[in-house]
Structures are given as structure tokens and as C-alpha cells.
Length: 199
Image 1 (tube, helix red, strand yellow):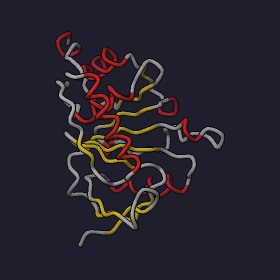
Image 2 (cartoon, helix red, strand yellow):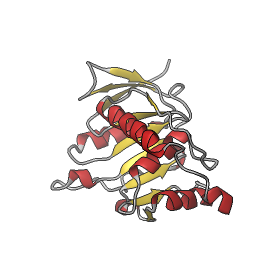
Image 3 (cartoon, helix red, strand yellow):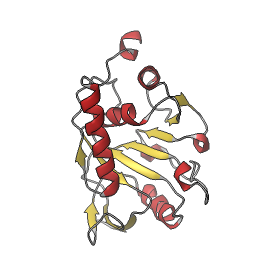
């Protein structure tokens, strides 16, 4: 446990943090388009390198994190050691939620959607996915998208059912970052989705 907890974070802390933050900004500004995260680091098993880099960039002493129970204990220890973040078991209290098995998490509406006065106070979901291919065909429209963009990340159908409600709640609602091993895709609450059934 001690060795895993003290695994080093970014090898080049300034450059890696800056590159990761830029990738997150670009992903949020251009929904549905993957952006590479190139940070060099060693991470605990079960946490993708891209998601780990985002955690080191976004989490700090001032935020509360909801961690899906399927994550191994050493991941919580690693995040605490490197970021100092606080953890909560209450989804509605979380600033960020870290998820690795979205199919097992049927209820997403329990996270904080923000308020009419403070929509920015909502939870941001950091979701690990297996691939950008192999999922349902979804067309995104909205700010940051030129006409429309087709995506196929491996996500369960209930996520897109939830996403339709999430988009309608704007300016309240959740923002999402999807992570493969080496890249991030943004799904801000402004992105409208249309699901097409596979042939």
C-alpha cells in the first residue's frame, strides 16, 4: 500500500499540468472531439493515465470528491497523497465524481446539479471509458460544434437517457469528461445528444 500511495505524480510537474489543463479546456470547448493527454507518470492499477493526469490537475484541498466504490483502496490513497482532496460518500456534496464503471451506476441525478443562482457549483463527472469506438451512435449538436458531430464511445444506454434530461436542465446540470488511457473527450451540459439505434 505504501509503495502504491507514494507512486510519483507528474514527472515534469509544470509542463505536464499545463498540457493536461489545455487538453481539458479544449475538450470542454469542442465537445465530442478527443484530445491527447501526454503527461508522463506512474499510476495505480485501475486508473487510466489520462484520468489520473486530470485528477492531479483539477483536484486540490478545496474540493470534495465522490469515488465510485469499485475503485481499489490504493487509488483513494494515491489521490489523497498527491492532491490533498477531501472525499464524500454523498453524491450531492461532490465537486468531482470519479467513475470507472458507468454501467453499474444507474442513478446519475443524485449528483449536484447546481442552482439557478450558482449553476457552476454542480458536480463534474470524470468517467473512464474503454474506447471511443464500439458504443451507440450519438450525434452531438450545440456550442463548440460545427453543425453536428458523431461519436461512438462505449457508454451504457441509460447514460444518454440521463444526458437528454441533463441538457434540458441548462443552465443547471452536470458536465462530463470521458477518459481513455491517453485522451479526454468533453461533454459539457450544453451539448445536445441524439441517439441512433445500430443496424
